[in-house]
Length: 206
Image (cartoon, rainbow, N blue to C red):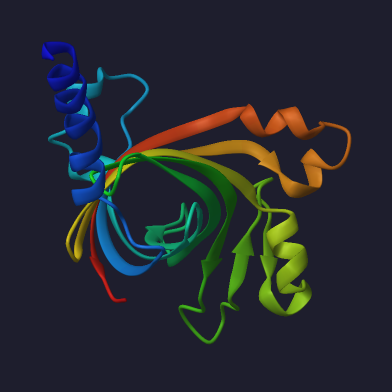
């Protein structure tokens, strides 16, 4: 009898949290995040107080079951002092560990840097993976994506009603799609150039 009671208690401990935290099949959310990119010459904690190591971004995320698509927009400043934006589009897999209370996410995508025109004398341009600046009217959008850096991500996410929280490590690689499908090969996507740790707060739209 005691063994049966113990078995029932174990099952309740397993299934009650999973049912309470069961996540919805579809989730579309808007989010805002802060990312920390540490200086290679400093210890991780030493650069936290430097505002130059922080960046803020907005994002939209859409999930259907385990498949997820995300679009991230970072305001940036290029070396010439021009203001621009980094657009990162990613596809990922979201694996629930404990219902909606904890999910593991991993995936990748492409990041395209766009610098708009700052004056009549300067045309808008893309910054490609090689660092080359190419005017927008001189290259097709698809070709610019094909020659832009690949990004990888690993994240832990939680959903508490309409509010979501995500701890993400976003990695920029030294590889473009053109490189991965050419001489460097597909394994070159793991040649990481830099990484940023970010915390994202999101609100479920539907």
